[in-house]
Length: 73
Image 1 (cartoon, rainbow, N blue to C red):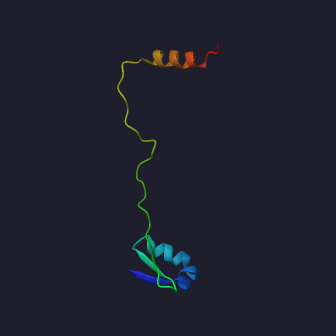
Image 2: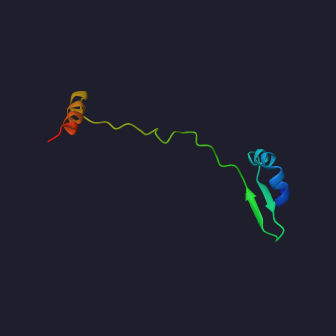
Image 3: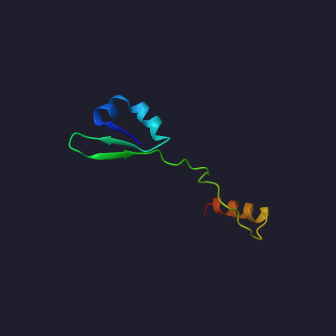
């Protein structure tokens, strides 16, 4: 694990972020506080990738329902 001082982290942010993609990085401040930086895991699936639903509705049923929802009173 690589450790940076606050000043080093500010001056080398791009390097710090590149390292954080591979391993956890610590940033230490003057008052002794320690912060940890680690890249988040990338989502491999789309949030729109949902399983299908089996129904007995036909294409005509769906089109009729859409048409009915668009009719104005």
